[in-house]
Image (tube, rainbow, N blue to C red):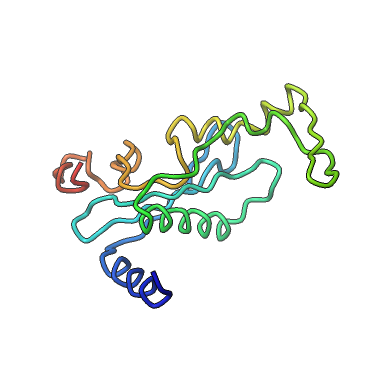
Length: 160
């Protein structure tokens, strides 16, 4: 596919979008656990979701989280596939040095692992991947769009 063909396909896909919706999830003393970006088409269907997980070691920056989540949602939609599995065990080891092509790894202390993995563990309760194509909406997402508040037909809201 040439660059012009890719740009044309991107423009065609973006023309199908009705809404881009962001939301943030907080839990148990953590300021922000993850930022989610939902892409909704003109039929009201959830066509893609992107997730950006916040690290407790970083300062929370709303723009950075939104940018990553949006990029992952677009990636899922353009490729029409779910990608980037959430690995809550990724904090088990840390890189302490590099020598050429070899990495020297060290196991973290159990307390450090648990603390650093909190946002990953919390996010894993809701999602399996950071980049999802045609995901099923969570209850929170349905409530956000008032699909469960009695006034609107749930099937029509999201074509589940």
